[in-house]
Image (cartoon, rainbow, N blue to C red; front, top):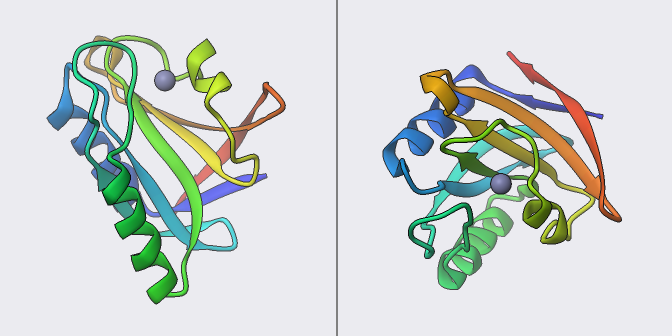
Length: 132
Ligand SMILES: [Zn+2]
């Protein structure tokens, strides 16, 4: 498995993560056939701490927008302001979309790092990011 996106998409997720620091940023990646064409920034309704919850209305709005543009949900991203870009125990517990990529943007030590994972039945597998 491989996730394809543009460098601008990576830059947008990193910028979003920095903007939300020290809270976690979160959002959706939409596109076709594992190829991202649009980033949806979502509001994190949780403050302070290693967690995120996306506002429900924004989730519906994003889903409707994807349908209207014939895009699929390709991935779900969030940031780790202070820890490495690997799924936490909670991330794994909450991962309910094996068809989606789980992208994590880490800002640890001021060095942005983005990694992507597939999570199925609590099994985590890293996948390649092809940033063209
Ligand atoms: Zn996490």
